[in-house]
Amino acid sequence: MLVFKKREKVQRHVIITRQAADGIITWSKTHHPNEAILILQGRNTRDAVIVDGLVIPPFAQSGPFFSGFSVHDLPYTIPNVGTAHSHPGGSNRPSLEDLNHFSGYVSIIISHPYEDENIGAYDRSGNSLEIKIVDSV
Ligand SMILES: [Zn+2]
Image 1: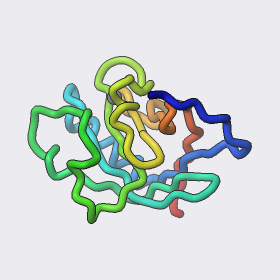
Image 2 (image 1 turned 180 degrees about the vertical axis):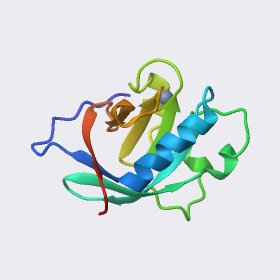
Image 3 (image 1 turned 30 degrees about the horizontal axis):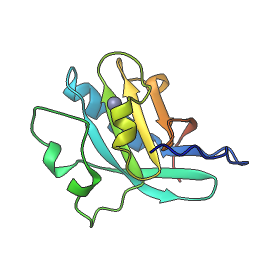
């Protein structure tokens, strides 16, 4: 069942380090035209989800790639604030399946050709979040 929450007063945003953003870009380019997925590490604050690390899901190290996975497949020892995955074709909008498999606080989606401006971030409801790439957090 879908629950529609009221929009929060503070517009939440996503802060990601240059290094983590480059990691997502490189990982996506490496796997093109397949989808690539990564686990996001960092922390969640009231105003922002801060991403400063990436983990390669153990079950995604060999093909065929699929981005729909269950959070229950993740080793519980990996702290995560969300996931990032690529859309080799089309837009970086989340699909219904993406939202159904939402894990953590943010879903980062990057579409071809995998540059900074192709990165999108979404909350659990599929609302677009502002994303800021910073040198360090
Ligand atoms: Zn997707």
